[in-house]
Amino acid sequence: MKKIEELENIGNKLKKRKLKQFMVFKSTIENKFIFSRYCLDRINEIKREGSMSDPVRIDFYIDSFFIHAFSIFDILAQIINLILLIERKHRKVSFDFLVKKLTAKASSKNKNILSKLARIKIQPWFQQLEDFRHCALHNRNIYSEDIIRRRRGGYFSSSASTYERFLASDPWSWSPKTSKKREVKTYCDDILSKTHQTVRKISRDLEVFKKGG
Image 1 (cartoon, rainbow, N blue to C red):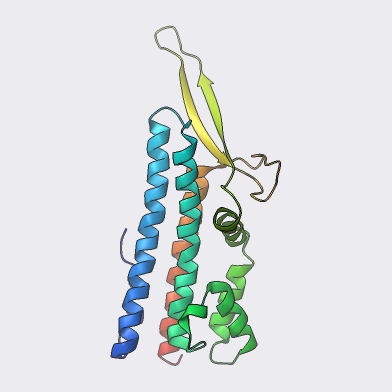
Image 2: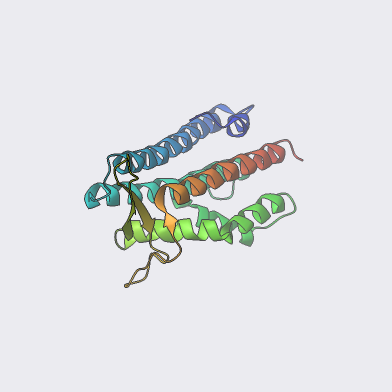
């Protein structure tokens, strides 16, 4: 995965101690994108093998995707906190914690970033990501279901089957259904793309904040 240029720019002119911390957080975000992409690639490989009937591997990669993808926001919160100096104890910082803390300490200086983070929190795709991640980490494996589509062969060709995997419409349901037809690879690709766009946007805002704009 390519480096995120907007994220790189934040490190410019940071003091030595802050720069060291920033570089750790930056490389972790980049790695989390790589880990998330790796999970999706493995799911796609299993699909190309002609069967999605390996539940242990499928559950592992689906759960891992949501855990790594959501953690990008928690690490982004660490970078925001490093620049805005909201909380001294970095072990307390998470995305949700920072939004609440910023709301309590709202000022004219940080209101632009606060409004962006608040808008992220209410986006349906983010709420779904948060739900899937919380379910995988604190509750149970995310439910998903195989759908087999069979295509009849023609006179000169044999029939073929394709396997697709769909996520539960509601990860918390004790009687899960896949009525929303969230095909794993397509849906997760979209989540990862939106996460990437969000990191770029927030990074640009942090650069403006650093410059006093």
